[in-house]
Image (cartoon, rainbow, N blue to C red; front, side):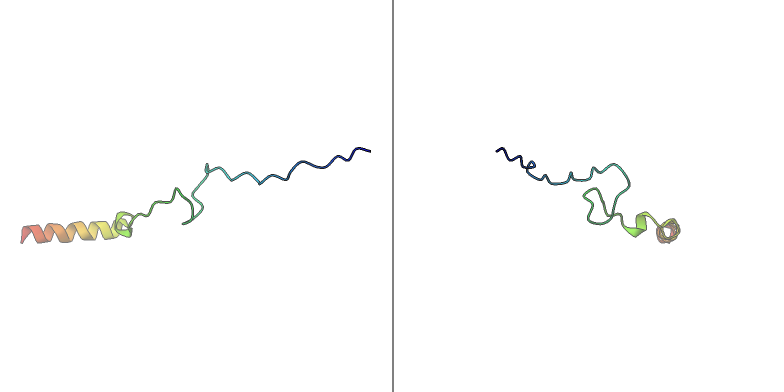
Length: 55
């Protein structure tokens, strides 16, 4: 009598990072300070620096 067993169960493949970043735990995530992304704050900061340089 021959008993055939199923092969050893395999771990599911890890998802490939091809799409958008999935959150803070994603290894591709890079922190960007808010000052670098908020354009209105950036213009306010530049104007304040220019006023300080003129005085």
